[in-house]
Each structure stands twice: as structure tokens, then as C-alpha cells.
Image (cartoon, rainbow, N blue to C red):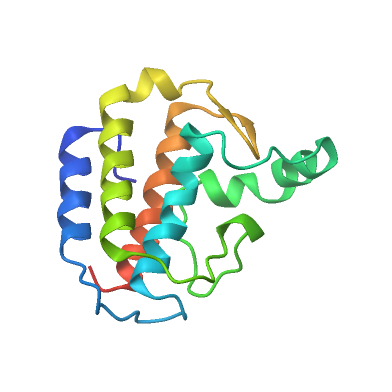
Length: 150
């Protein structure tokens, strides 16, 4: 799996994002391109912002046991896989705003480097390794960029 925390992969990913336009259409799924960008921002909001509530102890246990491995391993997501409720974006979003936020999160992640993420707590899964954070960030973003053909 590519290491999105490194400068070359961050730049490559930003170049892919910059190929998107407000009229980009998905190859599968029903999100607009602006909704997809907002959806991808949720992962970074959970890592950097105090915007989303931490699941209760039972839900965290269930997420760690049944979901964590699928999210942090290197196996690509299948098309039209169900997502967690906080990742559902139903309202209209501003393409440029969401694109710029996502690029900012990517740059922030790369600038912080892997040491910042080693042992960092995930809201849903508890402490993760830097590699698990990388896999979660890259796999999710790559899935949705491929969804929009970039």
C-alpha cells in the first residue's frame, strides 16, 4: 500500500484530486463529487478535529472486533460498501471548499509525519500504528478517487 504520509504520495494524491471538477461523475455509487470530498474529509476530521462524538464503550468494542481489520488492512474496499452513519453526506456541499479542506488535511498529515500517528488514538478503533493510519487514510481516499475515475 502506498504511504500517503510521505511527500511523493501526498503530491500524487493531490494531483489526482486536482483532476476532479464540479461536474465529475461517479463510476459507481450515488454521491456527487462534492459529497465524496466531504465524505473523505470525515476521516481527517476524526483524526484532527473535535467534531465527531466518540462511540460508547460497547460500540468501540464492536468496531474493534468486527470492523477495524477491514478498515486498516491493505485489501481494497469493494464498490458500494456500506459506510458508518457519520460518513453519510446527504446535503449539498461546495466542491471547492471540500476539495481545499481535503488537500489541507493531506498536507497536514504529511507535515506531521509517521511518528505523530504511531500509537495515536482513533475515535472508533483505539490506538493505531502509523501503518494502520496510513492504510486507513490511503485506502479510503484511493477508493473514492477511483470511484470518480482519477
